[in-house]
Each structure stands twice: as structure tokens, then as C-alpha cells.
Image 1 (cartoon, helix red, strand yellow):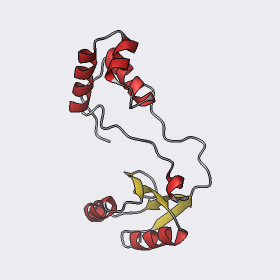
Image 2 (tube, one colour):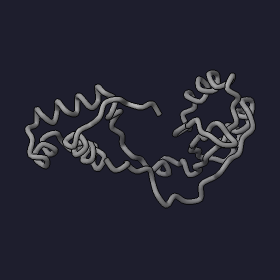
Image 3 (tube, one colour):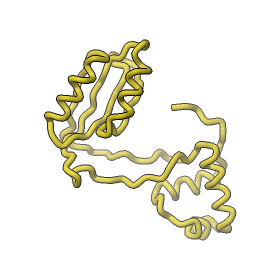
Length: 150
């Protein structure tokens, strides 16, 4: 995660909080909530996007509705010399929800979803060309992805 030099002020933080609660909230509704004009809110959102503070707007989807009932975390040990090739490879796998370079016994932690265990097994076999793996299959999730307090 790159560090951003732009520092949002209190009004920016309030706008961001509202958008994290509901990314579909209209500029008009944000303006009304914060006692600002719509053009002011639009300009601030534009500046937040241009400065990389707001990186996108996303729909949160229950992947099980599409048959992806297997969620797993794959720990992978990747040698530094292989990272570039690995990054090119992992970006092309649509079942990869997130991939992070981490400290500890493994250098990568990869979140994946699959419809069948055989598909997960196939990915793990392919990943082993990059290094040793350890896989954790999720039984349940007590805290879904959520926004941080701003």
C-alpha cells in the first residue's frame, strides 16, 4: 500500500465517511447532509479522486449467489527474483479476490473464491511453481470487509 501525501481535511473525511456507508449516495444528498453546495461536494470528490484518496466505487456482492461457495486464503512463499513473474501471473486469475505481499513465513497471502474444490486444487498446484503453499479454507466469516474509521 503506497503512502499518499494528500491529507483530507475534516469536510473531506465527512464526505468519505458518507460514501463508505453508501457509495451510491448522491452529491445532492451529501451536500444536504453536510450543509454544503452540490458544486462544492462535486469539486471535493473530484479532488479526492485525483489525489488517489478515493480509488473507486464498488458494489459488495455475495459471491455464493453465483455458486462461489469455497473461499480460501493461500499463503505462498515467493522468492524475490520471481515476484515480477508471479505478479503478472496472479493478476490474470479471475478467482483471485486479493493478493498481498506480507511479512512472516510466507511472502504472499492470496484470497480466492471457487465453485469447486477441484478448481482450488488446480490453482494450488500451479502456484507451487512459484514456491511452497499453505491453504486455509474459510468455514465462516464473522466480520466482512468493512471501511476504516476516518
